[in-house]
Length: 124
Image 1 (cartoon, rainbow, N blue to C red):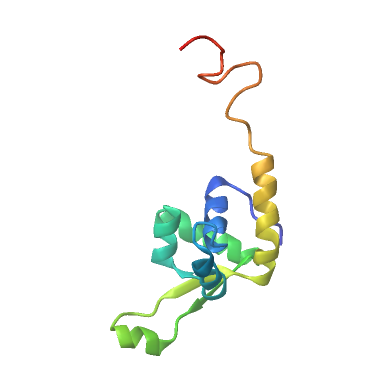
Image 2: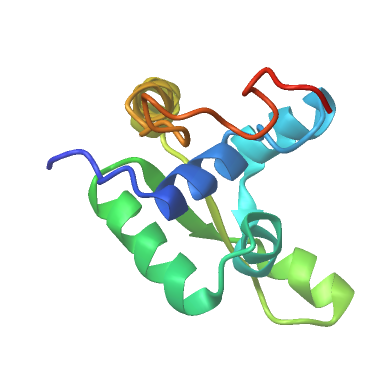
């Protein structure tokens, strides 16, 4: 299966699943245990209608795996089970490289031949 397209939303979700938005201790937990859908939506800032189709495409590409939490955990808290998402071994290997390549190939926000505000060199 081909690699997923590296849209801005895809990059955001991969960064969250890599734990790049978290401290080191939380990063390890995210990588091993994953995040449930609502938490992933909150951390990525993406609505469910964008997030879940994207997760499905990442799963079909072999980059993400999903699983249900144990019944006992949900019952102990008196709520329905949660579906968790985490990077697969393939995703964990390929995502950092894909993100680096996407960042390197991103168009510059300043067009060549133009100056950004504050760089013209005049007096302030």
